[in-house]
Image (tube, rainbow, N blue to C red):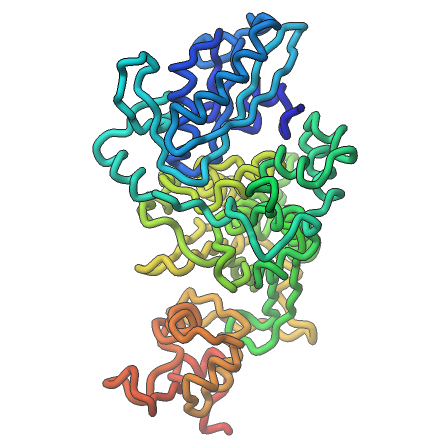
Length: 519
């Protein structure tokens, strides 16, 4: 039974990080038990890990060809792994075991996905008189006991499984597309691709870890529906990328919109390709005394790719908010919900030094890494900073609020780039940005500004933005307009008054280009 990943990639750490790999020269049940427990706890939500038994390690790298295991020991080791999972780990945990041959040597690959009922603890020793049970976690590339604050944090994760790794009881196995699963396996070079057509959807899904539940009642996992269903937005509303072009600037009342839906990998690639074809331009600058001209782009594609993939990776698929890409002649903004984990300091993030301690979507990240769409491990922001610097562009900007309800990445246009986007469709000059604010307005916010030429109650504005949740509407739509002084309350001393209405300020009038006295 082959793994849903190429063995050669495991032996060379691609696309799996070294901290998710362990190599064992031989069968050491106690040592391997502790590593299984650590991978099951998946302390950093990276997706568990792999143990290759029969492969010696030297300075963190596999020694090839492998030492291998005796063929007669393979079956007994598999039985002992099953026994350890039932009797030496609490709650019970069963990894997936795959015999494999490399250079005619037999090895065992143990796939230990993050468990669904963490925290797990394992027996500290397998001696009969040992009664101590210990929580184990991964620290870098080592398995260690969870102590102090690490143990307290692990316990706080009790029975919490990331949303993308949960069963979806509103779906059924036929909602998974065998064709999409097969295309994915072929693209990443998995040995499983050759058998995909002969396996049942349940068997294929379990080997790819996108199906869970007991044999009598299997269900797709959310990550499976996001990648291997043609219409994931039916299960997770607003799973889409909205690309919006404002030909008159962020304050204008005209915009062109293109919406991308579908499986996450396809949706992401199609949105990136559309932006690349329609909104990226190159300018050639001849330099005195040099034969080679300097080439710059309005927005470096590498920065856009990292910003959008970051949003796909880290957004919440429980929230009914799309990823928005807003493009003007001045900037390109990527907005997603919610914001970064609270363990990330924004000053460190802006400098490219932030390291996340918790990943919201461990399985989505795993699939994106296998498709080479992301590296994970907090490398996205440094790549954006480097791409903008190498292009000679102004530094990117990263914004969120105190409650981390959103995350905004703003890529300013290169000041010397001659963009074909500088004119409106009728040839008029594009108005300047609103002075004093960096707010990139969504189409709903633009509509609200136009509506607020006359004072409007909250209910009217919510209907205009097609929102039903008052708190989210205030935080995500109305709040930024108030903070930017584009609108104001008619009864500011009583923010929650039932008679409260909202109207344009002078800055808001400038944003929509209309003065009340002209009406």
